[in-house]
Image (tube, rainbow, N blue to C red; front, top):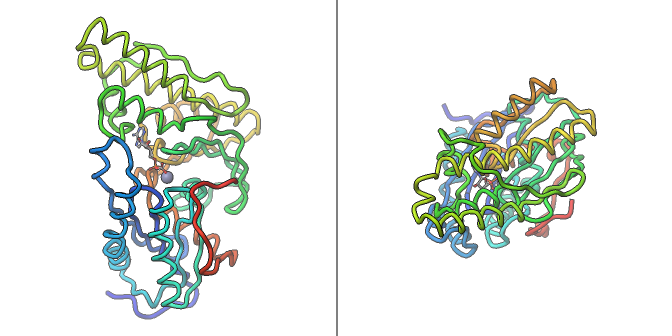
Amino acid sequence: MHTNAKNVQNITLLAIESSCDDTAASVICNSKILSNIIASQDIHQNYGGVIPELASRAHQKNIVPIVDMALKQANISLDLIDGIAFTQGPGLLGSLLVGSSFAKGLALALNKPLIAVNHLEAHVLSHLIDSPEIPFPYLCLLVSGGHTEIVKVNSPSSMEILGRTLDDAAGEAFDKVAKILGLPYPGGPLIDKYAKGGNPLCYSFSTGKVPNLDFSFSGFKTAVLYFIRDALKKDATFIENNLSNICASVQHTIVSYLVSKLKQAALQTNIKHIAIAGGVSANSELRTQLSTMAISELWTTYIPKLEYCTDNAAMIAIAGYYKYLEKNTVDLSVGTFASFNR
Ligand code: KG4
Ligand code: ZN
């Protein structure tokens, strides 16, 4: 059945995400996600990382069909949309411009409000989709390809960063180690896969000794690099014969480091509602370690569905929905930003 009669109480938004290498669109009605469509760009696998120029070209090709699919799956026509939310940043400028220009064009054509969403805040707020009852403040470990932060979420519009990485992000650490092991990009999910059945305590690597709630991953990455280089000198088949144990040990080191800082943040703030978000929150060991710590620390944990961990437009839709409620809209002259000072 096609929805052609508008219920005045309902707020329906179209959301567009194009910050990196995924083109995504979602329709939300009040806080319920009606569709969540994504086109990932496999082309970057051949290059060992995201190539910005190729990413923006693929966004241009994908954006019309992806938006169309999101509207169709939600069973709604454009004239019933109340506003357009888009990712303003941070991300690759060329990629962001494709999504923001498309959103602006639609907002202008439909004469509807435009809502600019911070991609990182959207990851953190993705929990409001399935857990609208989550109490504020909650702590969120945001772990993606470009960012690692511990965020205190006071409300949908007020967040404080309690700690952040001083160099590489956790996702980058996974991806860079995967590259050392000869695995394709993005390596995080492959390390997770090969770690299964491996011994997490087989090899030990040091992690960054930075104070407070900040993180550092560059020393860890170098430690793995030297360890593998030395092992290969002795045995050229070292990686292939020990892949599971290496991946399990690498994963265990990264995840234990993340969870120990999260525990420190929880003790420091006395907050027991703990969430994880971002691509690395899909990691199976992170999910397990968090659940185990929840028992000993009496935490209530919020672990996103896999489809809401990596980049998606549903999280832009929920963040946009709360901004719409606060009448926090922008005009067509608003820009996009590669990085944000929050
Ligand atoms: O949030 P996201 O999709 O994109 C950014 O905004 O960066 O995060 C992508 C990152 C990549 O570094 C990828 O390797 C990592 O998330 N990732 C994982 C897993 N799934 C995705 N890392 C470890 N284990 C996973 N299962
Ligand atoms: Zn992301």
